[in-house]
Length: 478
Image 1 (cartoon, helix red, strand yellow):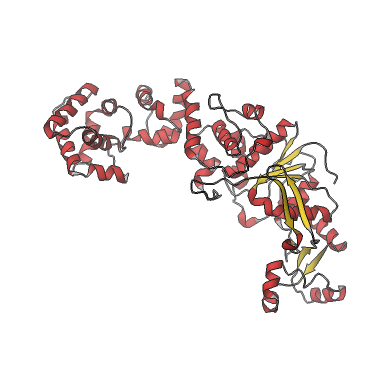
Image 2 (image 1 turned 180 degrees about the horizontal axis):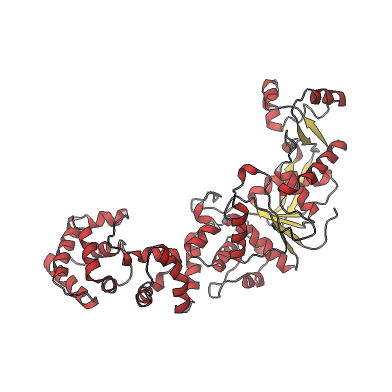
């Protein structure tokens, strides 16, 4: 298991569902690093912990990577490569071989300190804190045999040497851990199954991974990884840990955040290229907003030394702006084609002329396709409940109701409604009520669109037509 001199990196997610932005950023940096050095990007499926898995997790993972265009050179469910299988659930015999090797060499030992025994011990607090490292490590062979004959459950712990564990992180610089603080940690549970970090360390060496680039949440595992490698006389990989991604309040973005998954980005109608550019920005890499985002462009400007060590902020508006720039580059025909599935999702029938007129009104503000479809769905509705609290409060004001009643009466006198007629109606309402400015226009906008702002209201009213406008106004009369 000698370390290969070529660059080999891996993306090793646990298939919980759609890939999260934190995982995507790590995958992208690994992919760029491998491409830059003509290296190998390996996909390994870390599926040892069954409790964390989703039944369709692997399928979703592969869909996400395919949508993003992050192709792997080796691994995956196809077991494409010389170091397979690439799913940890199929590699248990390999892990057990090395666990037995460590036991035979007395670099590891069986620990019989189960929770009930620890709880009864006068040292129970210390034992919990440092991993019960002094209770079983020097048991005689006879004592161990006696315990095993009584079917006392045991775990396997690795003997951790005293002293410091120092490594040079390619992102954060030199990092130091105290070996004593680790304690003799568990590498196999009482059922004989390896811990996930033991399996990961074995796999990285077996698959000749040269660089492990991952999120900062794994930095505490790194000293364990190094100790495992040293115990087996293996050379550990080079490590790089990306700083956490924070929300607007400075709190690290959670893996449970639905709006930060690739599946959500795809459903919302973001381009894969803009999602990749956004992930690159979250690593501190430069993205030229004047150029079309692409993997080739990111690769041309990639330098791992540019990766930031301060926590980047997950700014959804920054992603929307990148996506809007890309939308604005589309030819009209391509834009309509891209929008149609999202319009269909909100029950919008295909009408080429009408859709083009709506796009004319909203094109400058389209930031994602699903958001656009939701925003213009009122054009195809027969009723329009107001859900926005601010809008609802506005439309319930007595002045707003005065405007709406006046508009309703004057609209009824028209045979048809176009932009010119609408403007004349609004001027008549102004004269009748004495209300002007936003107090005049905003109640009608809310009643007709459900929104507080938007494009030219006269053009919207003309596209809605008299009948639909009358229904929306009637819905909002109090």
